[in-house]
Image 1: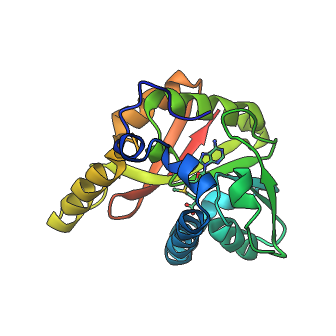
Image 2 (image 1 turned 45 degrees about the vertical axis):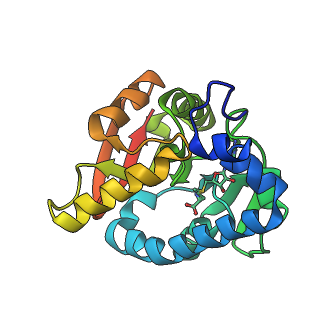
Image 3 (image 1 turned 180 degrees about the vertical axis):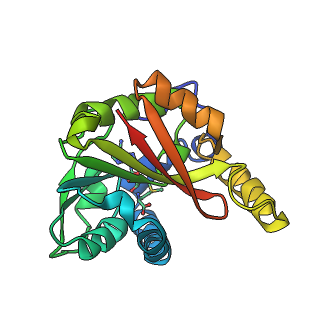
Length: 222
Ligand SMILES: C[S@@+](CC[C@H](N)C(=O)[O-])C[C@H]1O[C@@H](n2cnc3c(N)ncnc32)[C@H](O)[C@@H]1O
């Protein structure tokens, strides 16, 4: 499921466990990550729903893959009450998840199985993983959604290096994230690198919407 013995993750070298294995073993570490991600969603989802809420139109069922404690899914479900929103995450995350009238939770491993839905949502997920793992996750995503003509799509919120305004603060943010994500063995990707993993996983088309500096929304079609 997780990084192999050839891992170059600094976190794994220091602790003998991957970041996600540590979250499984250490409850306060687990809580800190989940709380941090909900805070990030509380900040970002308002902006996404206001600036490009159209990407969610017409979706009847959505799974927030690796959605943590459902901060993003909850915001989407409140904005689109007819949509059935579900969060998929690892058992140690789902066990601690708060009750939410708008969102249901399923525990599972996205590398093994993603339940079917009209659309999948993945925020701050792909940048945690190398290309090979991303292609594995994307192939599972493709199996879970209907064809494009039937409304199938994947909505990704992540960093696209080089997108956004050409300002010093944007470049500084990129450098900061490059350093940050290396400790996990993740990658911040330029558009051509995103395209490469999308095409390897068998997707046909994508559209990048630059949102907040280098953070972007990507609509991906089978
Ligand atoms: C950076 S957090 C993003 C959480 C959420 N998407 C958000 O933006 O608030 C990455 C999430 O991936 C989850 N995760 C890691 N490995 C996973 C796996 N194999 N299957 C499902 N979820 C996984 C972690 O538990 C964590 O909640």
